[in-house]
Length: 146
Image 1 (cartoon, rainbow, N blue to C red):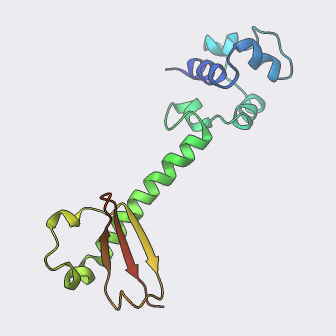
Image 2 (cartoon, helix red, strand yellow; image 1 turned 90 degrees about the vertical axis):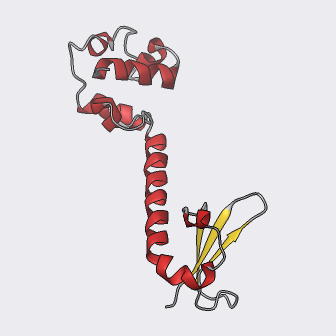
């Protein structure tokens, strides 16, 4: 998909019609965006800035990579960051968790659904504890010493 096609996709998503989009952009004529859609013109800084204000992810608009909407791209990045952080946490605490893992199914080696870092809790002592709720959600409580 070329830039013009992505522009059209975003404008239709955001405004419903190209006419509405042209009106939103300084009340331009309904055919204002046609050179961009045909890829005979490249959007300049002012138009790109307006797309960003409207919530378009400019990286997606220019390269096709990532999510179309800024908010969706932020959520995607946050989700990827959380996934990586969870895996790193599991790797870093795995050796310390061995004493409390005796008799726990090997399936528990999978990353937990949620990781909670706690500072002061007497139940944990110096160990890390995995709790499995009735609904199957696995929560890993990790005690940190300051």
